[in-house]
Amino acid sequence: MKKIGFWIIIAIIILAVIAGIIFYSTKNQTDSGSSSSQTETSDTRTIQTTEGADTVLFYGYSCPHCKLVEEYIIKNDIDTKVQFDMKEVYKNTKNASDLEAAAAICNIPTSELGVPFLYDGATKTCLTGETEIKDFLNQKVKNQN
Image 1 (tube, rainbow, N blue to C red):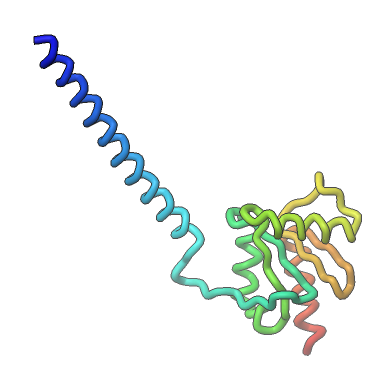
Image 2: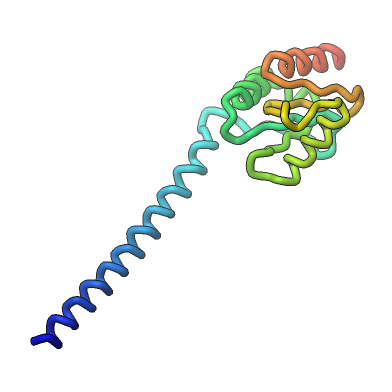
């Protein structure tokens, strides 16, 4: 009788482990699928960027102000009129280091850094915030006309 009880307990433990593995792997597949769909929207186009351009827009993938700047760029076709690069800094440590280096040129301490952040290498100008960046991009478009 004790042997049967022992094997029943072992079987229950094995089933619980298998159920846990299945639940965990299903949860991870659902989570990873939802995070990629948050960044993709069917009503927007991809912003055209120029790698190595003098002007760089640093942004964070989940930053609401960055999203507003991106939407403004698309709505006004800024990316077809002005060459600039975009670098995501929340998940990319090299881009975050590039942001810190750009801020250092403008004597901005890392403790005061935020996104959106625009660096123009031609004029050594640093801008932060949605309004300043939009104004700068508009001026770049006007200067090219």
